Every structure is written in C-alpha cells, then in structure tokens.
Image (tube, rainbow, N blue to C red):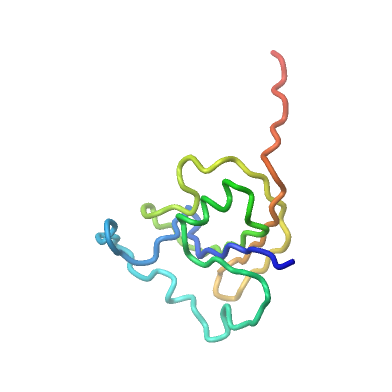
Length: 126
C-alpha cells in the first residue's frame, strides 16, 4: 500500500507561508525559501502520495490519522509572523523520528512516522 506523506517547508519558528495571497496579501517576507533552492532539490520519482504545501488539508489529515509520514524541510531562519504549519486546535498526535539529513545550505530534512495518539505520562502526586 502506498503511503501518504506530508511535505512542508518550515522556518525554525513554525512558519510555512511563502508569499502573500488573498487575506494574507500583506505578508512581508515574500519567497523566503528561494535562496536555499537547488536544481537537485525534491527531483526524485516516487510511488508514495505526497501532499505539498496545504496547511488546511494537512490539519484534516492529521486529525483523522490519515498521514503516514510528515517530512519537514526546516530552514535556518526565524520569520516571527505568518501562517503556521499546525493550525490552532490540531489534535495532539505522536510521531517517531524516521530520519534526519542536514544539507549544506543549512536546511535540515526531518522525516517523522505517525505513531498514533499522544501518550501522556501520569502526573506525579505532590
């Protein structure tokens, strides 16, 4: 069976917004991912289903436990404002680190496998 993978370009502070459009047309940072792109990036064939850059659908897939893997391309920048990867109200989920790969540009690619609902540790009695 094919896997459903979510890919997101994300800043260190969780921003995924790339350019202003619609309601967010005043986003000041434009295409902040551009300086890190190379012709070889994301140029690979594959059989898995990939969702790329949809924060709305991402939240729905995570809420229903339908995503098998989340791949975050973490950029070495802080943006301070903008649309975040995880929307407010996204249900808690657990993930396991599957792989991590630093690139010479400073981007770190982290892949996480879905591990089900978040498991809380019982609080210690005082």
